[in-house]
Length: 313
Image 1 (spheres, helix red, strand yellow):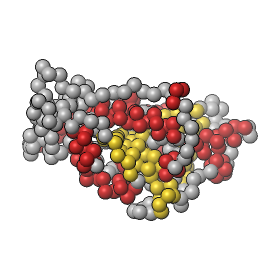
Image 2: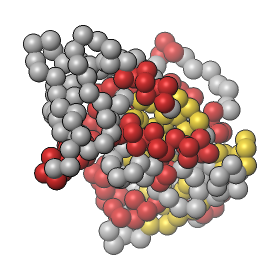
Image 3: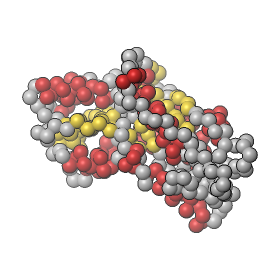
């Protein structure tokens, strides 16, 4: 992580990958990256925990850990790939978002996805255009932690260049000087929060397969979505009806998208490969509408048959 932060501050695009135990060790430097507004992509190939858990057995047990992995609790971006194609395209998006917002971006993958071999037709993929870091124009004063080209996101200059760059994760002013002034600290914290929460709509990635005749909405993410697609098709082939929401942006929570989909349903079901982590966000947004949950965290995938059974459709 330290090498990646240094490479990023030197102006390079950097990425690292680990699993749950590694994310635990990364925590201090994740906070540094957020506080220092250092672009970085972090891939978490989740496996069964806690701690070293069970190597080579999958789970989605790090979801809330990724959200709250930094001291201070500032917002983070977490994307969840469904398959190998998503791993490719969401990695491009993760780099773009980290460069655009000067922040670390997580890819919440899963051991089952990482160890799956499948073909990808790169020619047919809709690959996002590459976004590069917004450097400070030469005729403009450089404020390493002040508003820059995009609202609430500072311009960037690499360490080692011709212009002075101050870098710190301690509380600081717009120039990068450490400060204890409460108004300056509060303004900086609020800016770092707003730069992500103010852009939620442009961060929200999802697939919504709506059945107009369905009362039931199934919400999933990650590798579980693959089985969910099969389960939904089986239910429809048997004459049943169900809508499917696959979330690819988990944090910041795409609240409007989720609430809009929930409004279309009478019954909401959330299925995860853990004991119930993201379902808390769904319950918070569902209001008085009851939310059912099915989870599994024993190293085995949740099958389409199990999904059909718990939904009773």
